Length: 245
Image (cartoon, rainbow, N blue to C red):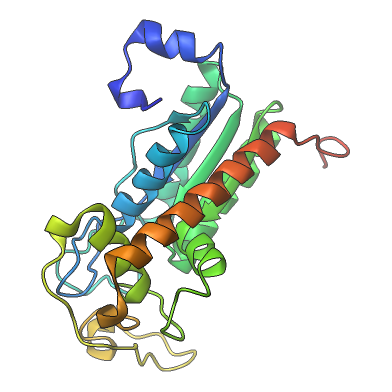
């Protein structure tokens, strides 16, 4: 059930079938010279929509902004603060919780470290506040690289490379503009730098040339399957103990 397409009665009827909602987070972020700025958002939303075809599941509209530190100097990237990201997640979950939803799968297509930690931190805080809440916070990239390891040829592929090029070639081929050279960032270990683009000029982490629509199809199917398994596990989950503190 795609929430943005439902009417009020349809949403209400949906609550009789499930109390589980999938919330996709993405970003507006450079993905080399060949992939759209919405790559992370597209991947996260597509997985939710495909999962909802197989199980009863509400799919919330995607949140297209994220915290993007390493790509903040690249043209097109729009980054929000982690405090803003946390507030967004909290407000959305509180609102849906007040509507009767109780089980939340937060999947982020953007895998930045601070971004992921902010979502997890917000989730932990919500768990202490909303006592009937069950929640998972997962990264789309982690599911793709774990489940699709046998498909991926590029060691260390992480951003706008083989995996993401394959995914967009499959779901939105019209948005892929050629390819980009293989590249890996060269940030100095432990040293903070202002002009991050000078250490990562092309904005690619991997080899886009190894991407294919067929790999994208298989990777997406694997991630969808993993999300469905996660939903079922959450719905059956009974936590030990109570609220700590």
